[in-house]
Structures are given as C-alpha cells and as structure tokens.
Image 1: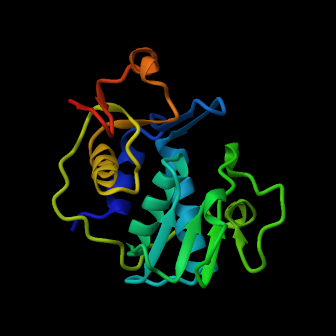
Image 2: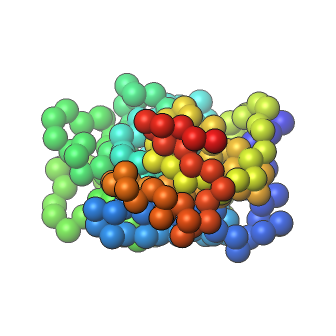
Length: 216
C-alpha cells in the first residue's frame, strides 16, 4: 500500500536536507523554501491540527479555498496523512483572506498568507479560526491511523518550476510524484511571463509546467 507518510519517511531517510518545496510570490517578494525535513514537520503539525483542532476523522471531507501557495502543499500532505478528501461543499473549510466574505462554512479556518504563516493582523469574523495562531502549538509527530491509499505513483526525479495549484488534480499528482522520486517543486505565484526563463535558470529547474503552456 502506497501512502504519503510512507513516501515521506523514505525521503527523510534518503535526503532530509534537500529542498523539496520552494515558493515565490513576485507581487510581495516572498521566497520560502522547505527542505524535506521541514516540509515533513509542517505536514505533521497540519495533520495534528486537522485531527485535534478541526476534529476531522478519516473519510471526512475538507474544503480548501486558497490561491497557489506553499501552504497548499502542506495542507495536501496533512489531509492525505489523515485520510481526508477534498470537497468544495464540505462543512469544514480553509480559506485565505479573499474567502472571508459571504457565507462561511460551519467550521472555517483562515490563513493570512503572510510569510512564515503568521497570524492575521486584523480581527477575524466571529467563530473563524486563525491558522497562524493554531499551527505552532501542534505536535511535530503524527501517527497516521488510516492515511489515504495513493495507488500507483510514478516517481519523478525532476526539479519542476510551475504555477500549478498544488491542490488541483494535476498539481496533486505532480507533488506526490516528486515526493515518491527524488524531485522537488518550485512554485511561483504572480510571475510575469518574461520572468520564467530567468527563474528557471536561477532555480536550476529541469522542467517547466505552466497552467497555460505545459512544457516537458
């Protein structure tokens, strides 16, 4: 049985210090890089947050409404570790600042999307949980009960520069494949078209995958 915790444990034994997720937001200047070990730590904290704070059990559904972001990769790792499914109508939701208007889910956790995943600086609507407050107190160790079975996963050894949403179908498959191989992800948000060649060179990408122009 192939599961995300099993794939992650293999990478931790092989190359814990290798960069796994590198994130750029060129509108803010943010650059965040997570090694395999750091990403694993975030995934464990997130899985504990899902189970203990959001009270989610294996088989439950979760809605995540975020732009392409490094936290999306972490949330994907957490939900697969917990045996959760993505569903756009789920009663438990994770949203960014743009998702705080209108009708909120029964349980809503909001992410400020600040560097280092810090808390909101402004008050949130009543009842909305602040991810920036909750994540730091979670345990670094998570013991999966019923992680998601991933089926056949093709290992991917590339360093892929992309703007794909890691929570979309194609982005999920890409991230899991990179974890199964020796690959890594360079995720970019708000990059001007003219900046792709330089970013690819600077990050030593071996493949580029864009939402509007896939290139292998």
